[in-house]
Length: 305
Image: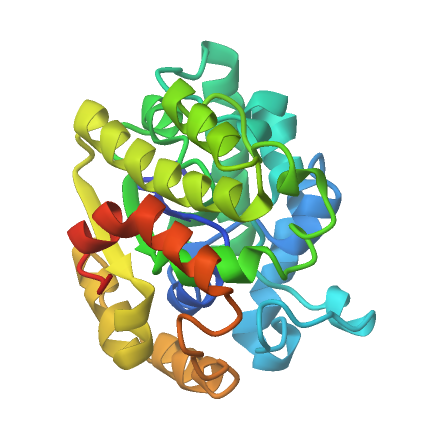
């Protein structure tokens, strides 16, 4: 019998904000089920989710702990781990879920049924109690809240200047259309687009405006849906006290912290690269531009400008 998901937990935030390390640490909790990398390859075969049970038998079946932007060896792809699983989400909700902000949009009856049914089957095959997922870029909070009214959200935030620097260097962003067109549809305001135009339509400005927009849109959505739990977790605070951060998220969403999580956090933090000086890699003019574009929002979030 399938298990109906209760209070699913969604980690959201801009790409390169530390969402991967935080979510994978949290998702190592033995009560949590998730869409796996194997299911993402074959979204129509939810029984593949059962492979995730191997990680409870032997930790070597779980994807290796490594820097999030490191290249994956071929054999490593056979191991099991959580995935953003956009192929799965697209099969359930269509292209709009992958490419749009979905502001003000709710799932229709068929989308709601498909999502709830698949998640219930995933939990059944994985023998887990609650579902958790990570989505980067737009939070799609209103859409997800229309499927699960008790959904809980953890918003991972990182200094926007560090995010911009990382985006402009990571493979899935550099040398792609994301340098020249907004990565997602329906989020940037006319004023933001005019600002991008005025500043020469550079990739740096576009990435910065999207960081600011994702922050703003998530907070707007929270105000409209008022989820039972909405938590903001700064990535820098996680780096400072990683286990305490994960433990705090556990308790906020109603989970008892698990020793498996602590072991995973300790192993994961061994491969997290040391932080760089924020200004490192920026020309002085670009650094000034970032502070002009993001300064107000950074100050609100407690970052030095």
